[in-house]
Image (cartoon, rainbow, N blue to C red; front, side, top):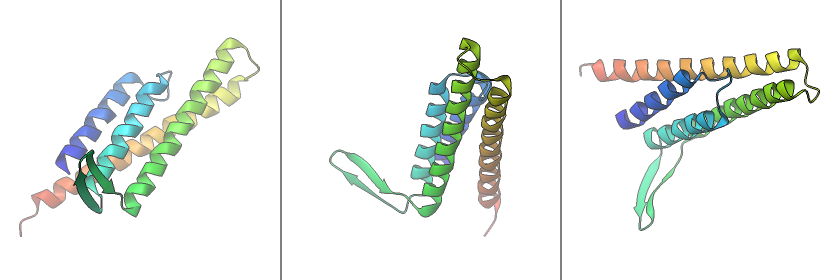
Length: 131
C-alpha cells in the first residue's frame, strides 16, 4: 500500500508541475490516470495471484469506482484540450465553451487531488495508531 501511495504521489506531483488543465499535454493526464489506477489496483485489490506471465489482481468495487472517476477526469481533460485547440485554430469553438471545459477539467483534477490527500492522511493516521 505504501508503494502504491508513493507512486500515486509521484504521479500527482508530476501532474501538478506540468500544469494540469491549463494547457498540459494529454499524455501527462493519461500517465496520471494510469498511475492512479495502478496504485488503486495494487493497494486495494481483493485477491492477487502470480502467474507465469506476471501478477494479476481482481479489483474491488472501490478500486473500480475510483478508476471510473479518474477516467472521467481524463475525459474532461481531453475535452478541455480539444476545446482550447479548436479555439486557437479558429475552428468554430467560442471562448466560453473553451473556458468552461478548462474549468471543468481543472476542478476535476483538484477534486482528485483532494481525495488523494485525504486517503494519504487517513492511511497515515491508521499507521500512527497504537494497538
